[in-house]
Length: 73
Image (cartoon, rainbow, N blue to C red):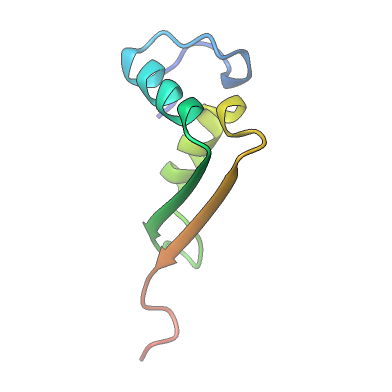
């Protein structure tokens, strides 16, 4: 987390892993993320992942599906 030296809005990635993720996201038209629920929402690391390559997500459909046990007793 926070491993890139520059702010994500500049898209000046230095790590190969971030460059690969950026290229993957840029090549797709839409996304569905399935994630475990954390405090009735998605985990902070998924939020960070979405914020890291923000420009690559602009004007694309994104869905987040959470799975958890809230409400089941």
